[in-house]
Amino acid sequence: MNRRSRLPALSLLAACLLGSAAHGATPGSDPAALARVRDTALANDYPYQRLEDLTDLVGPRLSGSAGAAAAVTQVAEELRKLGARVTLQPVKVPHWVRGVETGTVVDYRGRPAGVTQKVVLTALGGSGATPAAGLTAEVVVVRSFDELKARAAEVKGRIVLFDVPFDQDMADRGLAGTAYGQAVAFRGAGPRMAAEMGASAALVRAVGGAAYRIVHTGATNLADNARIPAAAITIEDSMLIARLAKRGPVKLHLTLTPQTLADADSYNVIADWPGTDKADEIVLVSGHLDSWDLATGANDDASGVVSAMGVIDTLRKLDYRPRRTIRVVAWMNEENGGRGGKGYNDAYRANAEKHFAAYEDDNGSGRPFGLRAGIGQAAAKLFAPLQAALYPMGAGAFRREDVVGSGDLRDLEISGVPSFEPWIDSSDYFNYHHTPADTFDKVIPENLRRHAAVMATTAWFLANMDQPIGRANVAVEAVEAKARATGAVK
Image (cartoon, rainbow, N blue to C red; front, side, top):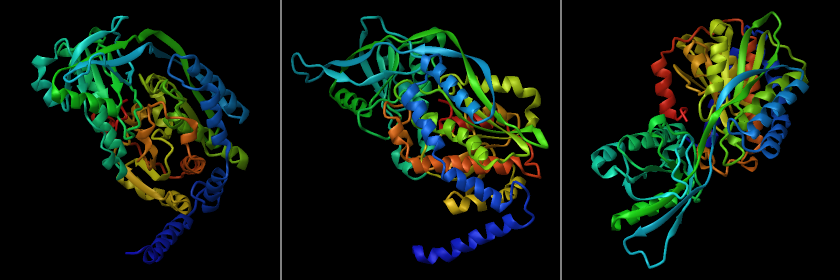
């Protein structure tokens, strides 16, 4: 079917959705009000301005750092200026710092006299340290966990390299999260398994699609009593070592000197836009405030934080007051511990039923095409008015799922809170995610406005719904399985 022949069908779908929205309209489903929220957000540069402030003025924001503390202050002050009721929720966070990190291939078959080759690498969060002078060891290259187990006798005292590529073809076809989940399993569990087999260190091929010799950091799950040095190396250097290993033994000199310091004091930033007749019920919108330290975390996840801030700014501009309280949360420590989400759940577990819905935007700033909704089958039909409102901006897609699996919302979702996230084009997200390239210039202003518009329209709709969505019946195992499959466990 060509593009022209599709237009009548699309127009008919739009008419059906709009008709459904107009029938029996409520404050949240009123097409005119939803359209005003959508259009005001689409015309609003406030989130993009705040993104520039957060990335350019504060910079990297790893938990426990001066940047993370400065981000808390900056975002809280901005939300107070909007007239929101701001609370700083204390949370103890890990304080891990990277030190020296160098790698050099020092010996291999066919090496000319006096020649060595630099390897571009970076320590993984939670990595142990080498001696100050580094260590030199032979490299064992593996491409699966099964191969690692089969070669267990070769591992003791050596450096294990997991040379497992990120499936960019899968990412290009709308399955970036799944592709990431497949590859990041080796970053998460690989170093721990290598340590258990007696490896002296572990290296993981960069988990991403851009082969521009940039590294991709992230957390690894090492045990405290076996915290070996663990680093990510670039795609190109992983492939180089693998090729050299086919010729014969390869030796690498590795220096990593990270430190795990005492837990630091930090905060979730919570800002409430109070409701009217249902003010004790909460619609939560959020992003996470911390980032890795290689860059300024523009996509992961400053864009999510400023989109949530934009919800309040949009409603302020319209002088709209929702029935339910809309709560913005800028989570702390999503990247290397999840302490912010856990701390919030601990504080609010007793009244989790007062959380009507929760929304997190943490999959980059690519164009959003709609929503993913962790709701029951029977509730899906309630969202036709919202789909109709998002349809004119090209974001009317809606996918109901048993579990959404967003990292900071994990415990709320287990408690039965219906959870939402934008359905995003993430095909190039892992080119930048957790790398030195995740900077302000990578965020397209129009896409960020779309993110803020989807979030604001959804928040207004949820905050004014007459009918309850219903509590989700979610098993812990289902949430954890979804998180593993999509890489939400970082």
